[in-house]
Length: 344
Image 1 (cartoon, rainbow, N blue to C red):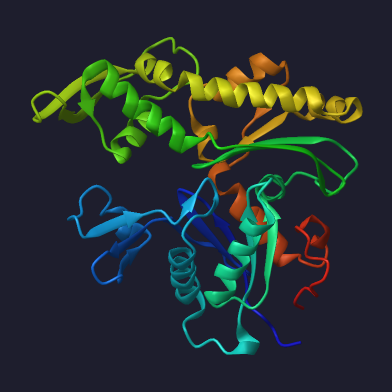
Image 2 (image 1 turned 30 degrees about the horizontal axis):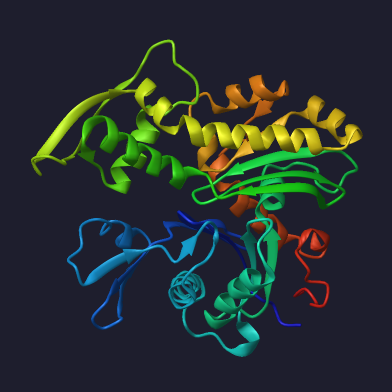
C-alpha cells in the first residue's frame, strides 16, 4: 500500500489541535468559524475567527461548530476540518493520497454523533477515519501504560466536557462524561458579574478572569484583577476590581459537580484497580487542569494523590498522534473500527 499521511486531531469545543505523523503538533487554533449570514460565505477560521468574537456586525457571526465536544453544525465542522487538512497536505489530494485521521471524541457519545464526526472528516478530505475516546487518548498522551493490567484513572477537563475514565488492558472499565467544563465556568463568571455587580461581560473577558485569578480553593494571598464590562443600568463602561475569592465563589458549583463525579468514579472502580490508582494517583489533564488548586481539592476529597502531566492541554492531541505513529500496535484502543484495515 502506498504511504499515507497520518493526522491526529483533538477536535475540541474550544480548541482544535492537529498532530501530523513525523512532525508532532503543527496546529493549535480555536474551534471558531466566522460566517457571513447574508451570503453563507465563511470569512475566517481558527485564530482569525477568534479575533472577531463579540466584535462583528449583525450579519457576521463567529460560531463554534462543536458543542459539548460533539458536532452541532455539520457543514461548518466540515469546512473547519477541510481548512486544517488543507493547511497540512494542500488541496492536491487524490483518492490514493488522502490522509487517514485519528480523531478524539468524548466517551458516551451516541452512534449518530460518532457518524457525524466520521462523515464530516471524510467530506473534508480524509481517507479513513478512526475514533478514539478522549480519556484514552489523554492517557496515551501522558505516556501512561494503558495496555497493562493495571488501573489508571484520568480526568480530562476540556472546554465543553469533563471526561472521567478508569483504564485497564487497553479499554475503558468505567466512564463518566459531564457537560460541565471550562465553558460552563465562563458562564458562571458572566452570571456572577451580572448578579453581583450589574455588569455585562463578554465570554472572552470571563475566560480571561478565570485564567488570571480563578482558583478552586481559597488562596493564602488573594489575587486581584480589573473586571471590565458594560453597566446594565447606564449602558456605559464600568470597571470593578475583583479577587480570586470572588471567582472561586462564582465557579464553585460547577467545580463541586466535577469533584463529586470524580468521587463517584472512584467509588465505582473495582477494588483491584483502585489499589493501583491509589499507588499511581489520578491524572488530571485538559485546559481545566490548570485551574489553581483544583488538583489539591480533588486529592483532598478523594484521598488519592492527583498528578498533572507535562503540558496537560495537549495530552489528547499527543495521544492521537502516538496512535497515528503506532496504529498497528495500538489498534485495540480505537472505537469500533474492527472492520477497517489500518493503513500501512
